[in-house]
Image 1 (spheres, rainbow, N blue to C red):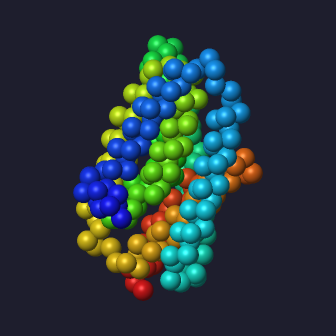
Image 2: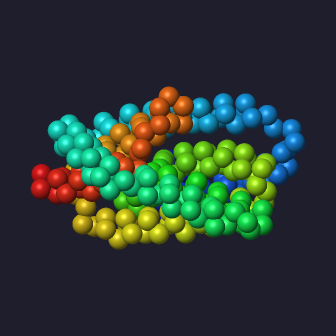
Length: 234
């Protein structure tokens, strides 16, 4: 309880913790780059994948109306597929990586890590969760994932990976502040339904982390908006 009380008084705690985890992971990777087997990072990622799956399942239980959850996920995902959000984001990231490909290794490490750590759905969901006043469990879980990822990136891309902590802090912090500004206009039902949809997205994300099946979770983002609109009229 005391930890929760402390966190509640620290603005953007989840994003700050995420940034610190990236810096620590980078330092660890740079220090032990010659003695760290890939099996260790793989096992750690799979462990985080199981935790993410558990988080997703637990979040879906917040729904007060399963029909709202199903309708939001189906309609939102269809809209995301038509918009091809996942494809657009990946093509944009690949294009940006090609543009900086000829730059120094530090720049490449910064850009690559920034894209990877910021482009995922957990960054958006976690930042929104913290912005609406919830315990930042998603961003804390993401902090562990990014910390492990930064170890692996630092081994091959060097010190520039650590600088991506600034990108993560600015990106997620901006979303958290925006969500916080909108919180007074959100009902508890709206928050519950958005959380339930986010849980479904996390389950899909966990399948990719566990290397079971890659699901285009970014295409499911419109489902959050659909859930918010429907729950506003309930």
